[in-house]
Length: 136
Figure 1 (cartoon, rainbow, N blue to C red):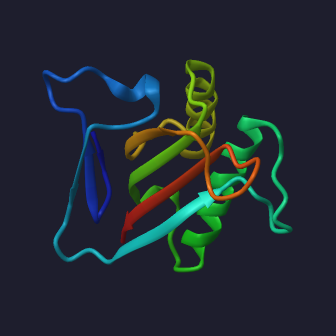
Figure 2 (cartoon, rainbow, N blue to C red):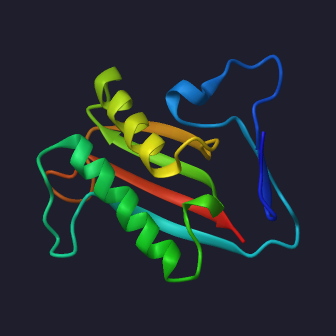
């Protein structure tokens, strides 16, 4: 169980352990928390360029998410909910995402997450998009 001042993540008994897939089952948010809703962040760099590599786009999407959070004084530690869109989803891409999530969040519990396989995203060549909700 991971606890912050604004929310608590948990994996209730009776549900499988989702940590190997890079997420938690449940987030309980305190009513007096300040919420941030971050629009879908893709793998484009500050010049709008996309790497052809899924892993590199996943890393950049998380870096973009970190920049958006930092603009409001927050970090990935305050994220409790993700929605993950993956083009041509596969177990390989899921493994690459989990590796990037592990790098970003370290040993801490990962946010709750819904992964949605999609046929394409907004930009040609875009392979991943992640939106987030954070509580401070």
